[in-house]
Image (cartoon, rainbow, N blue to C red; front, side):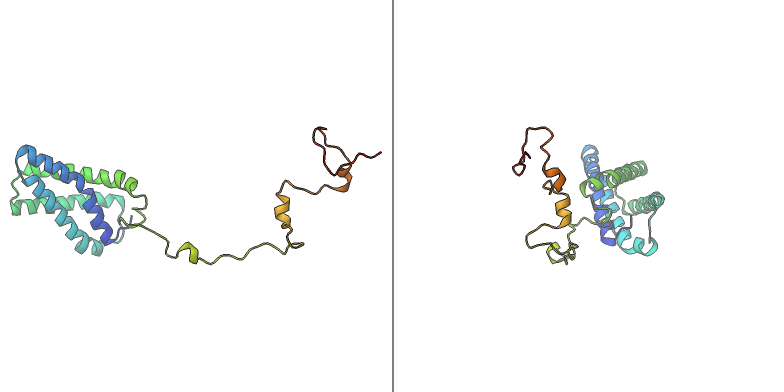
Length: 190
């Protein structure tokens, strides 16, 4: 995938919905708002990296680079969490990050291609694609049919695939093999 800047931001926001729900549940259960704060910091940090850093240093992203970026983002998020004093123990922050990352990657790999079939081809952007030139404005190719034999007669190829055929003269005097269907133009010879 070769994401655009907008595609990176849209994708990051979409894949962090699941982790944000998990962090909200963890905040409600434990009474620590640090879980949801850390996910918010993760989103803001990721958007900043997606806008300012990644387009400059990453021109093509092979699959293995996702893991390397995850480790780098983990270190940055851990340091930001310690500086901002979000109220989580180091173990809680580490577990939250890696569980959130796993959910986000699973969402990106499994859910997003199902939700938007053209998501990968659109550089990670969620957009409605349409025709760049409406089909009505497309030039029509010239017809490859030759001139008709007579006005109103179908072309030879159309007659060839048709069930209506002209019989050769030698078969016109022969009755139908089944004897059930008589041709109106057949007159038995005497």
